[in-house]
Image (cartoon, rainbow, N blue to C red; front, side, top):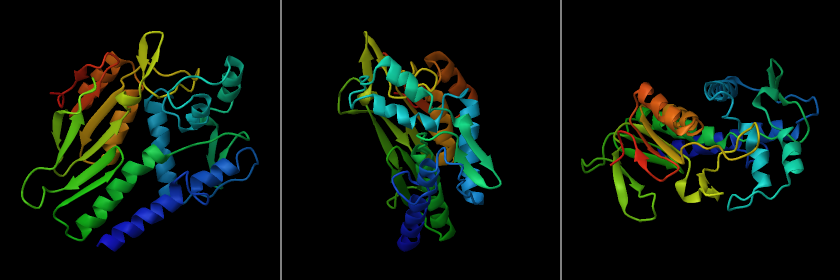
Length: 270
């Protein structure tokens, strides 16, 4: 069983990870602006359609082509590039400039990049969970960075619990989220927020002006699948704070959010 899960993990990493030179994503990036299309099978096309749906739902703020803008900032989130350099980089941003036809996928201009790792992780988590369920595994916790899912409860009958740390620096968990037969996705990282002129921002960058988006610093969503949770958390993080929280309420999934003043909100908040 473990071998099957490990093989599936290796397959999806090799196929989609931007860190793998032979992956579909790497091929698209390498062929940007050349007129050469990277073929997409049914699984790949489904994933790209999913990303496009997030792009539309977020009013085009969820944009994997903003990966290139990260090079304009240092590890602490301070702008390294000049305004002119940033404007030049913005010309290489735009998910709408990824063309998908029967021949495959192609980025319009040389130098453009996409990174789908944040979407691949929850897909992998759900895929591994499906394999385990098909083999009648009754207890499991699958975790990849900020994405996780479980099967049943712990072997001793206790609940699977995920701790959420206090955003003001305490190492004590302020909330414990019960994660039995559910998926959880967390987007944003309040510990890596950036202060600019007294205002706190997360690391998400706008595809419009290349500046940090003034939204929630962190969002966690609990849903039936990890990919569903990822969808909700990813879009909410890119909205304004008030509209994001209202949007999450309307969705009806349990959620937890940290705003730019380090306050906690949502049904999963303490």
